[in-house]
Image (tube, rainbow, N blue to C red; front, side, top):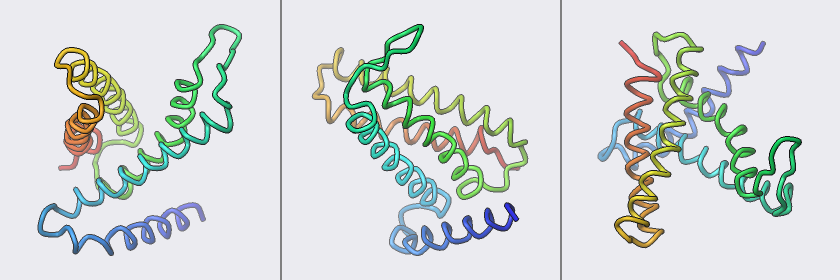
Length: 164
């Protein structure tokens, strides 16, 4: 039963994504387009969850835990991460990079490593561009995002969801 639901969801999602592929066919392969569509959708969901969590769930207040206090923007980041991480993994494993010969737990571990590296790269590049090179923050974020997306795609394709 669960397998049938998964197959129908995957098929529906691919039909929706692939409708728009002819517009991009000349500039990128289908797998890259699917990665962009799934990643873009998951990123948009992440931003929405972050916004709702920060403004309405946490109400911009510090989260006091028994052992630490977490600022609301970091707590909202954590909430969004815990929701969009498994969604991103699912989309990458079954929609974008299906056909990997690696075991699912290995894919999950590698996916998690790549995501952690991407978070670290975002931090490092923003520090470099804004604080060292004294670029404006918004162009810095745009360049950083472009670099991290390329790294993430290549890493997920050639490491996390490696195919023969």
